[in-house]
Image (tube, rainbow, N blue to C red; front, side, top):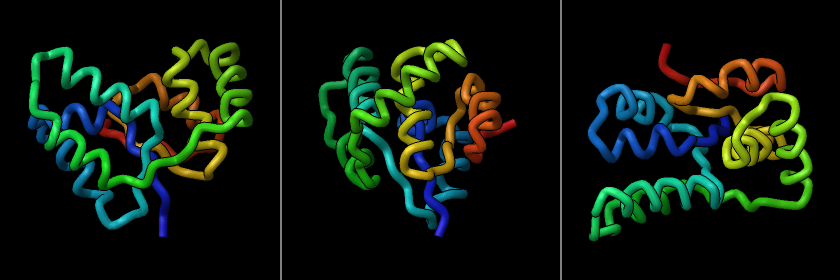
Length: 127
């Protein structure tokens, strides 16, 4: 079974009702799907920032994914991604998590596409 890491962009856009994001998530629903604490934080922060008080729906969705731990090794990989790809720290930690655990990456963020190719991480997005 394929293992796919789901980026914050997919989850946030699904919660907003974006059909493209919903279709993407639906197309991978039968795979092993995971997030990390960075995605949990980003999605929750964005939802709260826009005044959403009831986080039940958000937490139900986030809890439906496998939660991958961040490790010291992942942070070391992320440091290289910040330097080599000029990625933001959170994006670097997401990409490093995929690399460390051997997951593909589902994202609507095109910043990941070239980095995934360079790191031989399968990128699943919408063209």
